Each structure stands twice: as C-alpha cells, then as structure tokens.
Amino acid sequence: MTAPHGLRAIPTDDRAWLMAALGDALAGGAPVLPVPAGTDPDAVARLQEAELPAGTALVVRTSGSSGVPKAVALEASALRASADATHERFGGPGRWLVSLPAHLISGIQMLIRSEIAGLPPVFVDGPFDPGALLAAAETMEAERRYVSLVPVQLSRLLDLADEDRDAADALARFDAVLVGGQSVSLVLRRRAHERGVALRRSYGMTETAGGCVYDGVEIGDTRVRIRAGEVQLAGPSLALGYVGDPALTAERFLTEADRAGRPVRWYRTGDAGELLGGMLTVTGRLDRVIISGGVNVSLDEIERVARELPGWSTAVALAVPDPEWGERAGLVVETEPGALPFAEVRAALRERLGAAAAPLWATETDAIPRLAGGKPDLAALTAWIGRVRDSFRQARGGGPADPATRRSPNEEENA
Image (tube, rainbow, N blue to C red):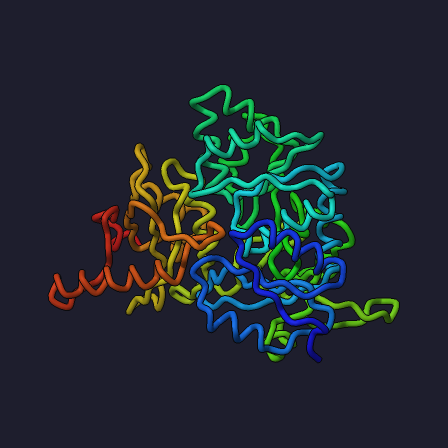
C-alpha cells in the first residue's frame, strides 16, 4: 500500500522549507525525505518511486556504519512519542542547538522536538567548531537549553573547557547535553562530571526514532528485553519498517504475544547487551564479534577498554585474517601526544579481556574517516588497512603484512 501523498525530497540546507515540511508531515501531510547536498539523484528517485508503508511521515536513511545505508519509514505518532518522552525525561520542552546533520535521525529529531515544542532551533553552521557552538549557545533565549552531540564533539568541547573558563561555564549552562551514536567512555563521562556538564547518554537508532533509552533506563513507554544476548526494543517510537525491503523488515521487526495475549512488536537491534538491576548495558554489536583461536572476541569491547587508556580515546578495532588464529584484532588510532605505548595497551587488553583479544598491531593516522553522524567509517577504514597490508606484503616480498607502527617487538612470542 502506498502512502496517500508522494514522498517529498527536501534539501537539508533549506531549513525553512524543511521545518515547514516536517510540520506538515507531523500533521498528516506528505511524507518527507531529508536530502543532504551531494546525494545521488538516482537514489532519491528510487525512494520516491518506492512503495511506502501506510502512515509514513518521514523517511530517514541510516548512517551506513556497516557500509549499507537503509531507508527507514517512520510515522508521525512514533516521532511525537519519541520527542515527548525526551522532553518528559528532561523536565520539559526547551530550545535545541543543532550541530548534527539534519538528514540523520539524531539531527532531525532535534527539529521534530523543536517543531512540537514551538521553539525554533538554533543552527551551528560549517565544520564542527567547539568555540562557535558555545558562542551560538550564548545567543539562545529559552528557559531550558538542550544540545545533542556525538562523543568526539563532546571531547573537543571538554578540551576547550579545560583551557577556557568562559567556555566551561557556557557548556555547564546547558540543561541537558545528550550524547549518543556511540558508547561514551568512562573517561569522557568523568571529565563531563568534573565540568558540571548535564550529560545524558542516549541509546537508540533510526528504527526507534532516535534515542529511547537514556542513561540505561527506558524513556516514555519503551520496553527493553534481552534474547539470546541481543537487545530488543518495543514501544510507540518503533519504525514502520524498511522502504522497499519487506524481507529485512520481517527479519528485524517481530510480533509476539505478551503474557496477557496481546501482540507486542519488537525490534531486533543486533546489539549485544545485558540488563542489570533494570539498567541496560550495551556491550557491542553482535556482528562485531570475531573468532580468534577458537575464542569469541568483541571488537567493541576491545575499543571500550582501549579508549580508557591515555592517548587512545579514538581507537577503532578492526578484524584482520590470520593464518594461525583465524582472525586477530588490530587497532587504528588518531595520533595523540603522550599516548601510552602500544606494548602497554596490548598488555592491558590481554589482562582485561584475555589473550585472544590482545591486538596484533596498531597503526596511527592523522584523522580517522568518519560518517556524517560522527561514527568511524568502518568500511573506509577496512579498505585502507587492506591497502596498507598489501603494501607491507609487497615490501616484505610476500611475508607478514601487518601495519605495525606501534607494534611491540616481542609480541608474537608473548601471544
């Protein structure tokens, strides 16, 4: 069944048009597809020609952190439920400072919340600049002020706050600093706490209309369960499904009867996690688990531990084939002064997570490629490491091909 109105592709740089279109869609008008500059016109045309689930108000493409973006259909009631639950948890509506891309759910939900609250958002233009963001924050006139960030942005803001008292005060004046997209390291949380930042950690995705679990606890009418180690979510903010992919929709969204026999629709996140004392802890992606020497190893867990170590806050773990172990982990990290030597990082990972989790190598880069929402571009990193390994193989005449700019000389005999 097609939507009653044609899908409208709205350029995200035309903010007035986008806000008006979103308001119309929330009121039952034509569904909206936010389109950033540089989007393939053929991809937009295919979505406009595709059959939409009945009730679609918004189509959002996922970030594509796995390399394959998906188009998610959301209805107006799901968007409203998400926005209302956020404002309820924060103590009321407020004005949002927008520094995230408006074609991703993290960015567009700030526009949805603003539209519902009747408080126009404030936009920060250009590449992320912590000084410019805080300057824009000081111009906001509202009883409550909110901002949504990704961890790398929060880290840069805290770096500025460490050097500038006025910046620290401006950051502390936000009523909530919502951070999601990736896990927030313990080091980053401690730094935020020391600066008096009203940090709120968000967990959610496009398929849940954005964050639906804050600081480990469900917001609104969201429900969480763990099945076979996988985090599954239910509630009024769930998406209708994937545009043009009924098979994937059926695979990721399932309906089961509850104890009273009422049907409940669940979304299978693909994330591993656990519930302890009613609080959700997400430990990583199920598809980011490798088998190394017969042992299951979570690349996300390797990253989490490595990022707590001095100078390794940007570490990204990748899987590489190994003739003896099957697969091994390697690390890519942005160059940081005063970083702990790789040998000590490897020893810490070995002690915390076991020998199979000890990375084979680590290599530095000036800047880790990132997606529009701030997540590391794993596909680009994997391709780059493949090229580096090939160059090492050629240089060594077909020998081992490990990029080892921080590799411990004795690591293999200690593996």
